[in-house]
Image (tube, rainbow, N blue to C red; front, side):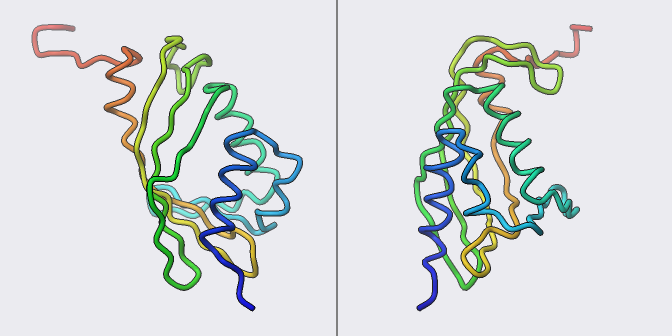
Length: 143
């Protein structure tokens, strides 16, 4: 019987990302786990995936990723989500605001033999960061 790839992604989100439980990450992530960013592939494996979760949870310790919908075609799972978390840590030079950030996005995960082997996607960080005052638009008359 083939694994339910949507369920695997859902359980990874619920049991690892939302709780920060990196001790069980190897149940969900392949040693060859690859992040895709700006059409470039970065093989980060289990160690890199753990470091990523730790970093995100330092910035947003109460992070909660809610699945709005999922679509699966073969080994690819598209997950539309809403992320909420309190901005308590510095990230990319942006000082913590202490405010709740809400971001929507889409993740595309590739699942083979019951494990995530590839992850990519897009998130609308700009609107959320602008809304909480973490970034601001500088107008023509401002320097």
